[in-house]
Image 1 (cartoon, rainbow over the protein chains, first blue to last red):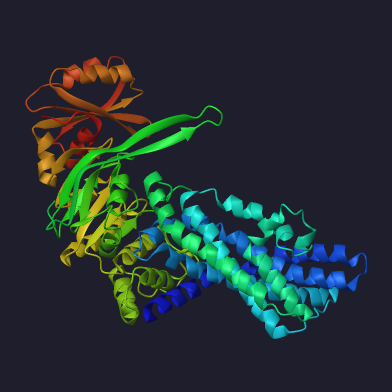
Image 2 (image 1 turned 30 degrees about the horizontal axis):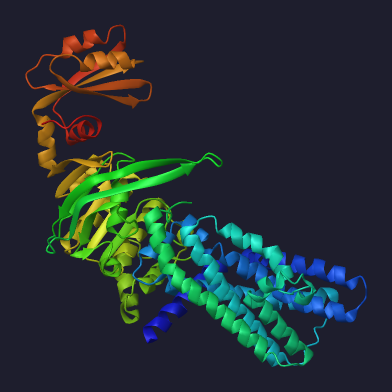
Amino acid sequence: MRQLLHQQWVCYRLQLRVLSTSLFDGLLAVFFPLMFATAALLVYRLNGDEESLQYAGLGAAIMGMWTCQGVIASSLLTRERWAGTLELLVAAPTSLTRVLVPITMALSTIGLYCVVATILWERWVFDLRLEVASWPLFVVGVLMAALSLALFGFFLSVTAVRYRTSWALGAALEYPGWLLCGFLIPVSSLPVWIQPLSWAIPTTWAMAGIREAANGGSPWVDLAVCAAVGCVYAALAAYLGQRLVDSARKHATLALT
Amino acid sequence: MNSDLAVEAVGLERSFVTHTGVLRRSRKEVEAVKGVSFHLERGELFGLLGPNGAGKTTTIKMLITLLLPTAGTARVLGYDVVDDVREVRRRIGYVFGGDRGLYERLSARDNLRYFSELYGVDPRRQKARIEELVELVGLTGREHERVEGFSRGMRQRLHIARGLLHDPDVLFLDEPSIGIDPVGARELRATIGSLVDVGKTVLLTTHYMFEADELCDRIAVIRSGEIVAEGTPQDLKRLVTAGRVLEIETYGVAPDAVAAATGVPGVQGVVVEERGQQQVLIVQFEAGAEVTQTVLASLGDVHVGRVSAREPTLEDAYIQLVTQDVPG
């Protein structure tokens, strides 16, 4: 167990180093999330409704996490494939799950950095102070959002072992995700037949929990569902992982770029 | 299957299926490896030689569990490459040539640390092991630098260090010297040679004949997915030492002239080698046969430069094996 934790910790640190080597990378990671947040706040500011602005401000903060974490996760293994390291990762005696978890956790850290950067941006540029009733519960909600997105990203990334174009699926999820997860508009305002899709994404529950924490309610039910949905994706990824690796060995897709 | 052997492949086959077209899908099946059989004794350095596309890498990838064979069986240290995947992976190292396969943004040392964790090197031994390997491959003093600034030779040596991290019994080296300058390649060959001295079994693929000649105990030549010859470097040389070689420098030789030269009695084979503006005909002929005048006459109006005769080399044997039918 100790060796496993050591392995995961070292791999997490080194993967985080790969993702954040330069100042340029640090700026690039938040550039798009900040621009999207800016666009959202400019639109919501038009009608002068402070409540709507608070709603958008909270959503925009987590929206950045969705963009830089959920979307990039699907291209994780594509990046490894291009670097020529995917075969080495698969050929290692360590299971693919153990290889991927530290990578997705490193991405979560970048996601958290995006949340903090967006909140600061909102404050400095738009003079928007987020009104949060319970900061500790808010932080718990954000951490749960990061963790569940890591699990969801783990699921998306596993599929790339077998299907080399699956990164495109992640990229395609970016904008629908803004609507489905309730970042800028309530999920209840979506057509009824679409809402089940929203509930199948753990970030929707995390967002609901964060809003509850900000409004002084109890976020625990939402966060519990968020954790459960995230765990379902993790279990599915672990189950599919070995099967997809075997399929990749059969169809020779590991080295294809 | 004999578990005393380091590697044993029996009738290995691998085919690839590709699809083209959107509305009218057409399916094409390519047989990359067609029933390859060979074995490696423990502590042996075995070379798998062949031109590009001969099936060397596909064979290696089946042995290191990255590809499933379409047919046939293979064992590494007694473990089946299909059924005992983890056991095989624990005991083998894999090194391939080229620039890829490393984390560019990490230092050499961090790359080795990362793969140490994935290959189950005891955390208490990692530091010493990494230092030992960095010294073995001659990267001492450069281990803290990012890989993105490394030359191809340095990357290749780092690849070897990575492949040795978990002290594997069998090492698969897939064209490790590709693209490396002569000095770097010589250092690399010295490193590879030293692996056998410390008891490792090495399977090396290359298309550099001199490299195989210098390093390998035994060689198998693979062509179009089939092994066409196997033996010690001396055995392979003997395939052509019964004859001699005539080198004819030509300018603008046409295929029909080459065909005419091939048909001259006593000629065993003709290979055309492009050297800048020249085409050098390498004519292998039976010992004692007098073919020079007849071959020159068969070339017709082709402008001919220098003509010389020499003893055949291992490279001639290789070229003959990969371009023509194997002599009985």
